Image 1 (tube, rainbow, N blue to C red):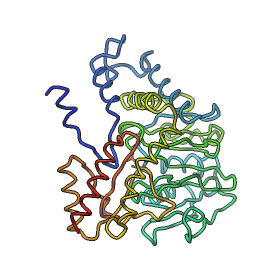
Image 2: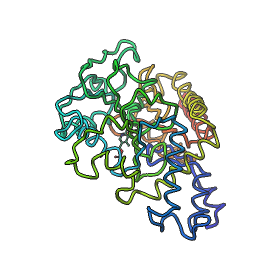
Image 3: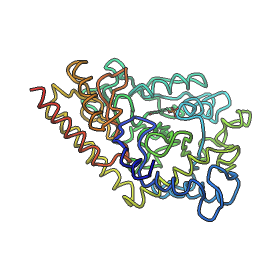
Length: 379
Ligand SMILES: *Cc1c(COP(=O)(O)O)cnc(C)c1O
């Protein structure tokens, strides 16, 4: 199969994750697959302690620092175990018996399926409290003042941290800005919107994001952590599960996911080359998501959005159609147009368009056009 054919066969893939990667990233990885320039071997074949790989991981970190404006008192780590290991690891390092703030409890904002699972895992490490829970309305909203009429957060001013999921991938509910915790550090699961806009890092104690949604491929989880927050965690924690291990060893205590880190380096380079900065990335994402929400707003009885206004995600647009038959017809018609992986998660039903950084606006426009046409065909 020639390369041109492979590229021509690519669809607009709306998968929630692993998700689309930018084509220039895939092309560069292909070109360098047999041999990194000047290295004589593929990135898959070199030691994680070789100068060539050290240059790659340092560049990936430097790109993230530049894009997000991460100050020196924060470490950037490249870990394994996915978002799910972080659910427990954050709590173990902070509120667990071996944690830096043993004796304190942590507040959790439950705004979707992922936040709920994060708390369930954290509970195995230490005491947790529910500070907000929208499960009664199937996680369609955020606390007031983000969503009008919603309950407020019930925060413990002495909590070790407030954990929240800035973008709930399944429900398509996203915080437009950080919740106000009155100075209690935020611990944030940013797995499905990391790098989609600039962040005020100083509000955070710790941010974690598995890469396979918006930042790269599966296999690596990026952690941005304020070093002094975790410094007092006990050395009796399992070595891998202690953030201080990875802070001290620059993510090279054990063999890190070298290929995934290499792709994160290429993705961050692509962001800088294509957009310049995350402000421009954010603007682009607002424009893309706006195309789809405009269709929902024009036909609110046909494309029924899951998220309440005020908390609609720029990354995952979740909506239902009036019946299962129409949903099936919608999805199969989309597939015929090479618009794939639009099925919603079973807990929400309907359809979900994941439109991360790598989804070109042409893909969103093609989906928008199809949605308008499908609607008008139904009379
Ligand atoms: C996908 C996802 C996870 C789980 O990540 P894994 O790498 O599969 O463990 C956690 N949180 C959010 C918000 C996600 O979207």
